[in-house]
Length: 101
Image (cartoon, rainbow, N blue to C red; front, side, top):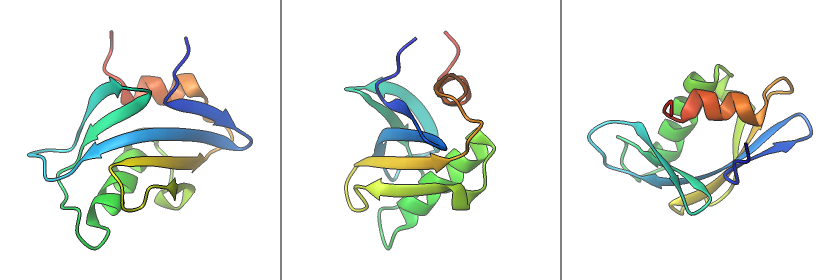
């Protein structure tokens, strides 16, 4: 199964996400236009939403927060993230983040 929002890199995976801050709760909404759409409870002020995103993904993927880096889109709703976890596959990420179908 192909997931355009998630791709394999040397030593980890790259994620394309689109976030909506100021939500009632943090949750995955699904895939929209080749990006994983997430609602974040945090406000987009002083990097709070970025920190909430990293915290949420680290917990969901069972990796340390230090393994997740925002590579593009620090101030944008669309972001590219790199997860440094050599044993993590695209299928593992999809299983952890997407609702069962």
